[in-house]
Structures are given as structure tokens and as C-alpha cells.
Amino acid sequence: MNSAFITFPSHATRYLPLLRKALSVVKAQKANIMCPDPSTGLLKLVAVWGQLPTDIRDAINSGQAETRSFNMGEGVVGKCAASQQIICVNKAYLIPPYSDFSVYGIVSVPIVINGRLEAVMTVTNKVKDHDTLGPIIDVEGQFTQADIDHLAQLVERYMGIPCPTRVSTY
Image 1 (spheres, rainbow, N blue to C red):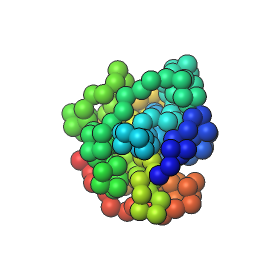
Image 2 (cartoon, helix red, strand yellow):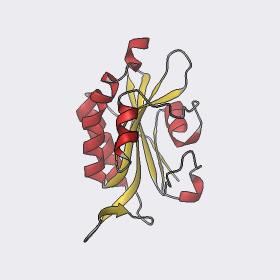
Image 3 (cartoon, helix red, strand yellow):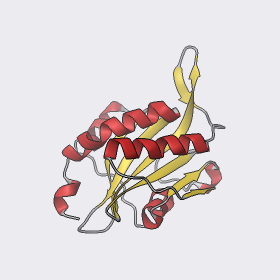
Image 4 (spheres, rainbow, N blue to C red):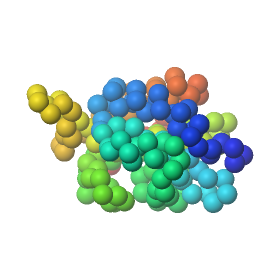
């Protein structure tokens, strides 16, 4: 992988349509893309979308914010990257806290091109509609097999590549 692949902000621009669609299709709170940094091997956050403060979203998407990186195999996203398989965790107590945002459910989908991991798309927290508040986190919401299938299909459609079909669910 060449280092030009992890350039900001064009990276965010490339992935934002995928993230927007993923959130609407599976009714989730947030989505992000992490890419391996060729110089360190760490997974770095390059694009985010969803219910989070606009200034934070914009700072991340423009490459202006320092964010946490993950080692291969670390957390759900790292396990997804290392195994190159979809990981779904619907039990909050199995999801280590890595930020101030609560996570009740998570799905990570690898984006693999020619056998090489290019990125991981992660979607967190199911939402439900509230009459006056709009979408709110559904703390008991579970990502279903249909959600996982939809996310895999979106990766295939938006990235033009086949998505891994192996899934680990916890």
C-alpha cells in the first residue's frame, strides 16, 4: 500500500457516501472508516458520520483532529482488520470502552482489495425513532444478520469489490 492512500481530506470524501448510506440502511447512530497507516501499521480514523458533534466530525473528516489508533487485533475493529472478516458484537459488556461515547452494539466490515486490507467500516448503536426527539439510541437494539448482509452489500456496491462473507457474532 502506498502512503498516498491515507491522505486527508480526500480519504474522508471517498468514504462519506458509504457511511451515510450505511447509517440510513441499518438505522445506526455512527459510522466510521479506519485505514492502516503504511508507516506504522496502526489503524487510523479517516472518516466519520452520524450523531456526533459537528465540530468533532468535521475536524476528523478534514484530518485536523488527533484520534485514537488501534493495533491489528485490538478491539472489534482490530480483530476485523486482522481476520479480514466481519465482526458483530451485540453485547455491550463485550465491547471495551475506547472513548467517551457509549457503545451497545457494533459491526465492523473489512474492505479488502486484491487480498490486502484497505480499510474497516464500523457502524455502532442501533437507533429508533422518537416522536419528538428524532432518532435516539436503542440500548437494547441488536444488529441482525440482515443488517450485516446490507452492510456487506453496500461495501460491494460503493467500493466495487466483493466483501468477505465470514462473520463472527458475539
